[in-house]
Image (cartoon, rainbow, N blue to C red; front, top):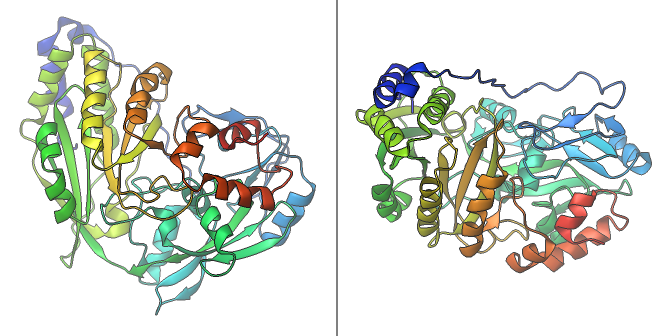
Length: 468
């Protein structure tokens, strides 16, 4: 959205409304993700909150173990409930605890690289961006990445974090084996043959089985992608879905509220030379959309006119770079998010209903709505279990209350058999999840065997999993 020029938007908004001419733009505080681990654990417990600020807690203890021995010792003796935190980029209550908060930031890096098999062991605290950089140095890359790469590997696996691509799976599908430390301090190795039920549960576990310490990731030779972006009316984009999903390796789009327009994004493999890196325009474009909400939110038709005028000459943009640089982008403007994963055939109608709900009710929102395709897998608690999926995500500016907005959108997802992203806002309970996941009871059995006393379960986690 780099060509949503600020001066153009000012011109069109001012022409549309006298109020706009005298309005003021409130200061918007943005924050970049921190990528470096603290050198040492905090001397005393400190309050914790996630990236957006919608989740917080006051743990009585914090630890940053450097290896599995330290971790095992901590798990045997520390206050419960015990929860691990990565980047704090989940919006659901997976992390908050009044017991012990663990960070695995000191357990990071890659090892045991097998160039022939294109595999490597990745420590659980490794952020996805660092993982990609380290794999690239040995000539490898994972097959797909999410659009935000600040998460720790363990957090991304625990919540089934995903990218886009009709034939590409979520991050847990790249895992070949895992190591985790249980509540008793036992270290368990698991894969498809060794402890296979634990493996099926651990790849997407919500951090409820134990603390994952490493995963062996399947990669491939380093490769380049050509990223193409263009603007198109959303109805035309939806009509083209089968064609776009079939023709491109990665396809996704963003609907811009109150515009009728969608920004399409494709990525396809190429041997073309890399193009010069350009500044990321996304945050600036989002802030410009906020400006229009602030000035023209009272008049949706004028807001639509202003956005469409600004987009009228939006050019097709192309960029070539290594895959890990084109698939993930920076997100500096904070938000809260609700994302559901729907059967692929039901997603277009669901999106139409979401757009209608937002625009008929003039809901206060400016963040684009994200629409991504993901391939089916066989992981017990994966939202993509046994069905090809489309994920639809709505976002709300972190300073604004999201509850009323999300409450109007969530029933649409329910009506279309949606499964929520484990790391995003939702209001479902254990009885709901049991209906959505055929292997729910199998997972519960493994969890109870590995953590019989519930060391890793906060009250919120017990409610989510239905544990008394």
